[in-house]
Length: 396
Image 1 (spheres, rainbow, N blue to C red):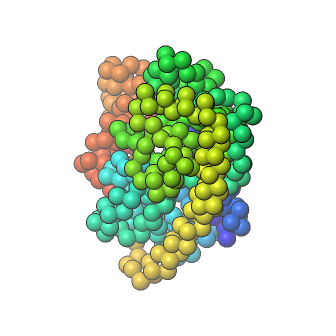
Image 2 (tube, rainbow, N blue to C red):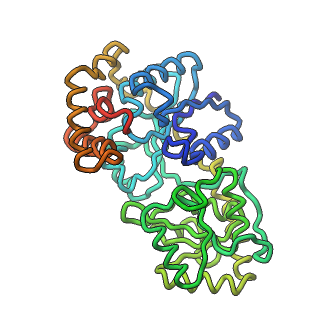
Image 3 (cartoon, helix red, strand yellow):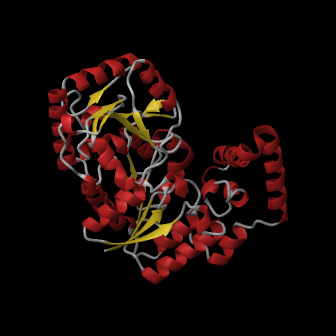
């Protein structure tokens, strides 16, 4: 099957942050399942002049390549809902979206785009009920995973290069937590954007985790701990995972037998010292975590299930009313960026720069426009007429 993937090669569309997990993990998994995979860049702003060019190029690529499946990881309003409906109306392409951060993005994003895909995934069990309550029954509960190509059996603790490591950006309270461990006499080798060592290539991350006696995972996101890809990547790479607790984690691993969790900085410090002093116990848990991951928690398994569900939904969609379709000329008119839009943009940027400064101002203006739009305009935010996309392509 030919599958067209819509996401970025880079983390958050920014080359300086290194290769993104979607590009590094999802595409190879689809290829291992026997599919021909084509990539279309949707997040990196240098790839297209604006959202109009992005969406029109997408339509051209689909017409030329005629994929059986479009597999998207949509972030915000980069792919218009009208374009998704045009693609659905072709009748020969299954549209799938893999969502991220539904714990907080469902209300502002996922519920608005769900009707325009044949299938949409979520990694949050509690959000399945929300989808169903909003009459979106095309949702599939899945989870992040480990990339099969990175699976490696654990090294004994005695052969590891690092005692304790962390791989991830230095945002939130991560620097404070690492500093607090240092005050307790525990040094953590940190890799990623914002740390002195800087980002590392995606291909190097599994080996860092495998060569660490203990790999830390700080799972806090938008006020709540979440299961993320790192939860599976560490044991899959042969590492020993010591992580924040997160809701539902026990569904995937036996705590204290396949991975371990910490509940406070003091608990974290105590467990680090314990496992460093008891390498045999660490090795037993790392081996069990690896075997569980290799057996159950790879992207190959996740995507095989999601594809099967999506084709089932595609078949059932034939009995539903066809989506409303507009032509490209109408899309261009909806996305008009004439004098009024330019004036509003200039005023918004000038005001934001005065308040937040020249660096943070543009992104703050875009964020404010988005927050107002999804609350007041709802689904229109993700259409060609959406105001944030018309105002702030560069800052999106």
